[in-house]
Image (cartoon, rainbow, N blue to C red):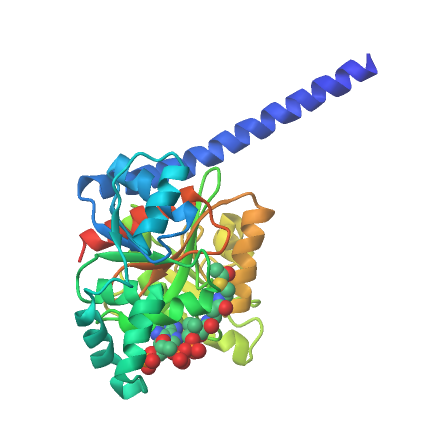
Length: 353
Ligand code: ACO
């Protein structure tokens, strides 16, 4: 009997687990459905810099089949076609091969943009022909593609540098930042910056907060931002706690900011209604924050990974905000579904250009 009840309990646990999982996936599916449907309403051209990568080819197939985007695979034509066939994918992909001769205008453009940054004409030629991250960046910069995805086969900084140099930040931005959308059973939180700025000052923190708020609205989420720290509203005062506090003040004084924002505060203050309402009822946030702005890259990168692995959140990202055109740098090891999801967010972003 003991065995039976043990097994029954395990089954119950499994069922409860499955229900929690379903509920959580339900929320993230719901969030992604909004984006996928928007993308399908007006699919845009997305340059996939790592076009010879099998996951990219599978993702391109799915984007094209489902009408989410018009993928452009950057790479050697014969290699891409051979791999597509080996994968059993029956499609006629759009391919841009940097090594075949038609790209002199890309070389000219890259040279024009980088000649005063130490790049010679022959180096420009080399970058366009041999480095698909530069090729895809120029492709987007000249308007032959609307968005770009890369990062699967590169270290994050080396994949990020070409788009920063060639595409650059938007007119209203000075800094790019990487944002993850984390979905839990009953809530969604956006985490920033998780991938780019090592030690942002208060102005950069404020800028990142505004870009992340814009991104949240693309997912139909009304932002409520918390500038995080290890102190609550002056409970510890030093250089570390000053930055998020000053960033919150800058945002509160900014006439363009039309969402509630406060800080500095600890992560539990930001997320637990009882703490906000009880101890800190003067805070600008009446409800828990859904936009968490971390004080530096260590905190942001470690924080979102803990939420993902221990908190069981579904993570969508990193979505690069603040860029002049939609660019997303994936993480090594990301799956086809991650690529397709990020392509969809890039398309939605491109629709608003
Ligand atoms: N926002 C926008 N543009 C930037 C930024 C920024 N935050 N930082 C640098 N740039 C621009 C520069 O202005 C420069 O442009 P220019 O050449 O036209 O003047 C260009 O990018 C290159 O800048 P550098 O100073 O040469 O490049 P740097 O070596 O500083 O690299 C980088 C910039 C790659 C963003 C760097 O800060 C970095 O490595 N950040 C951390 C990345 C990282 O390791 N993330 C964590 C792991 S990733 C993960 O978990 C997914």
